[in-house]
Image 1 (cartoon, rainbow, N blue to C red):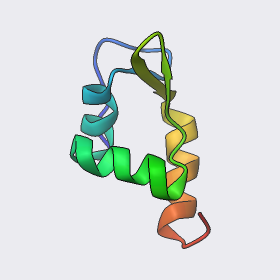
Image 2 (image 1 turned 45 degrees about the horizontal axis):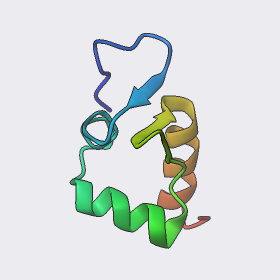
Image 3 (image 1 turned 120 degrees about the vertical axis):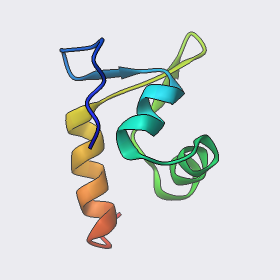
Length: 66
């Protein structure tokens, strides 16, 4: 997965960073949030998560354990 250059502390800030990391579109990210409980949340209008949380969720999603 792509590592954002600006955030060395594992945080992904903004939908663009999240989508770039997972190599998906914004509409796919929002669908996965809604349908598969992808671990992203909005704080003051900005989508945020961490790489480890996404990695864990994505591994379970790919394994069919979501």
